[in-house]
Image 1 (cartoon, one colour):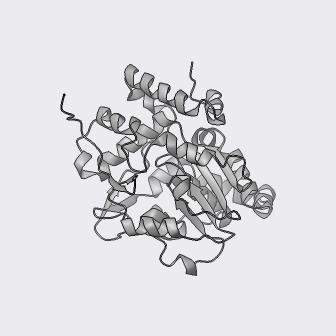
Image 2: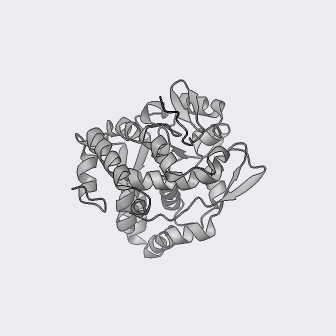
Image 3: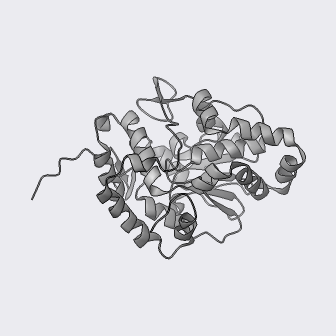
Length: 299
């Protein structure tokens, strides 16, 4: 048998769930056991699918277009990324609490009265975006190639597990009234419409605020543009843990944000293999048809 010599991203197996060792086991467990309030608002999605962008949009709506905090404060305090930060101190936060997870639904804290916004991005671009991030944050993968990462991704041997299993775990809640599903591609093409749709979902008062106050609406749209976020919101991560604010290292978290960047990375064989898994996993869902009329066209 030929020895497997490919580089692999570093993951730890916590009761069958794969996650980067940069996430502390105790934070993950406390997140799973966390009991949400009725008015909590969750931003969720597979890693590198647009959840950071989404949390900025949600924060901006709830805070009426206020100046954005830097991304480190956003992740740790304003919209804490729960499996990264843990839940310590959250009980003292004012309502509505804005919370973020990248967990599959079965591990996500659930309350039927809480609201959940799930953003999903085509797997080709998600794969490329994650590759560019792990090259920076995983010392053992710093010299890994895209071919190495692709093999990890298509086999589900990456942090937060298999991309398609993650999507399907959330898709089971597609028709629940306290869930809003958004594609990254739609957010990119029709940002203004998406902001209004999220505001309507969050509460009629937010939608009325944006439709009646053009200044707030335009302020939000200006601040959440990708180039603006990339320029003004440098992310710094610790070498030891995402939740540790010491020994911070700046990384290029906002890489490009473009739709279709995958075409510069994938070989024809890789495109074929991921397309086959894509169709096999999602053929019975609405997700497949949504992407057929999006920027991702499957013949």
